[in-house]
Image 1 (tube, rainbow, N blue to C red):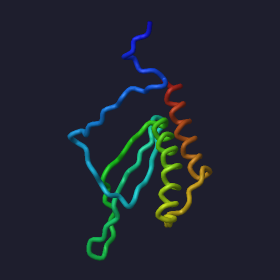
Image 2 (cartoon, helix red, strand yellow; image 1 turned 30 degrees about the vertical axis):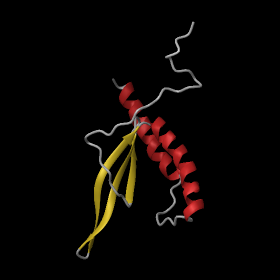
Image 3 (cartoon, rainbow, N blue to C red; image 1 turned 120 degrees about the horizontal axis):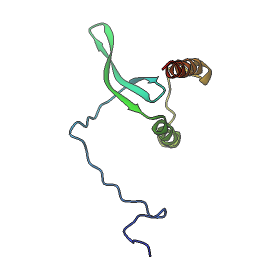
Length: 120
């Protein structure tokens, strides 16, 4: 006999949402990314002019697991084309990054981590 209160694959459990007291809502027009063997981070910032000088004001860093990054990338892969189909193409002013540019840094990081673990 099954317990009718237990969620099944067909009926996922209900998730209730709440906002943490530390919740913030920011606007960003600039970002940069970083990585460690354990997480990926995005620093969100705002470009602003003060006098005749331009500044990048860091607003927040969001860190996530590689698994969560993959979920985010799947969401963006669907959301961005849908948004552009309704509102028009978004022009990008930043240079395109390639896997070949990023890969050496990640391989070096992995190898350094392996060396640290093997020297213990």
